[in-house]
Length: 618
Image 1: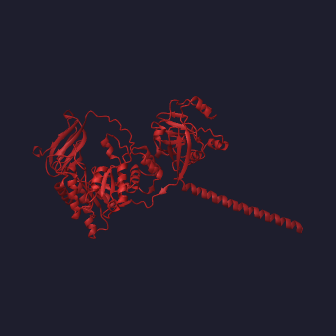
Image 2: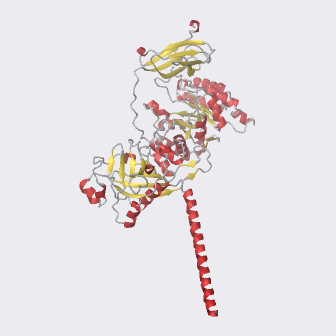
Image 3: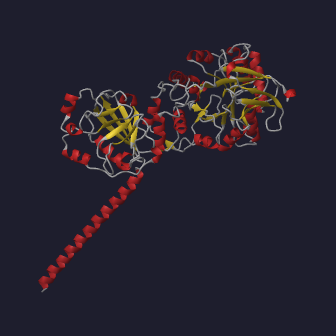
């Protein structure tokens, strides 16, 4: 009995040990499962950068787990394991798609993994419609995704309606390469024969393009270091933010005031009313918010708004510039100017209504004297070249600010390199490079109907992948490249959004993809000309004070379209035959009517009209 009891005790101890081991094992499995679950949340915003060589050139794809988690995991694993290496783009249909995903690998385990269907991811209505460059699975029904993928062309907007077509990434660089893939065979290659080996394609469809080798780099989404706007310390010791408010394009007092309240501390304006600036309204907004340099210096404000203004090229010359400085002091209601630039180095046909008194060199002497007298704290010029920069640097007081056209398609790289080299060699005289038209408004002057920056697929994809807007992407990219940006905005939410461009940090690969857009704008769309369209230019000959311009709608409503602040000011707009306009002294229903005008296309497609005071006729 004792021996039986001993055996029973040993059996009980053994069972207890096994049960404890099972508990430990279960605990470890549970912990792993919990860890894996937590991990999947951590990598929800994970990206994978896939670089591949092809028979036509390299392409770079950026895959987003947050768009399609299961699709991302499958595609990324297949690229990492070399599944697509040396395989053909076997279905290429122009203006529709490029399809691939039939491998010639002999790895049975890999082929089995690739052929095992995965479940559908939820549909992403926010990613619709399909844009050129988007990538998805070529599924055939619910839960049918395996290994075949496609890259969409411009005409594939109807794709993506099915859950198995939820996109998981896009071509970040090299879409021009993809467009060159041979498309003459269309639906010719048969998938069941392709699976037997590459000899079928090589014998019967020798012009088809193919992958070389692919590499994969997984990237965790980065949060901006502090979400704050980057800064630059000027040669005069003042530190300024690299995001300011441009005060052209109809930006007026309420918009400037809201920008200041939203946190803007740099406003860029100019003296030219005909170019859409209202310098005096900037001055009033800064004065009313008690954010002038004088308010800060006297201890009445904790901070101040740095205001930059510009002298019209028709006011070039020593005496004219001295008068222009005084004009800005009066309009901005200050005793000294933060920054004054020459708006252009010279006049040319169409931008000046009078010949300037002198040259930019004469103006520069007046600006230097203004700096000596404490009337201006920094000086500079817009739209200059390297040759002009050399001459400016030879002046007694060099430029503090240079402002040139800069956007993703027009990056001014060679000139910016000159600025960078100068700053490295002369830190005590360093120059701030500012970009104007950074969000693409300048392209309208180049014949574009739509803004190519806001409509660029690469920028749209990067924005979608990071939960950002295209302006936020461009602003972050520009400032990280050392460029100050000055987007104009009359929209309060857009003003806030532009300042909040740094919450998510763009990857270096995304930054380089934007760098690669330089010099590659899309061709402009052909404008469909309305035969009744007329380009109008109104000139204020009525009075010294403001003249408000109203369009009379079909319901006789007066719609305010602009203001000419003083005699000689102009207002340019596009209108149509039969449109009616009225010109008033102060604005509003009870104001004095000065003149009216009805558009007559018979007078030409471009018309200039001088608006004089005919109030006695009404």
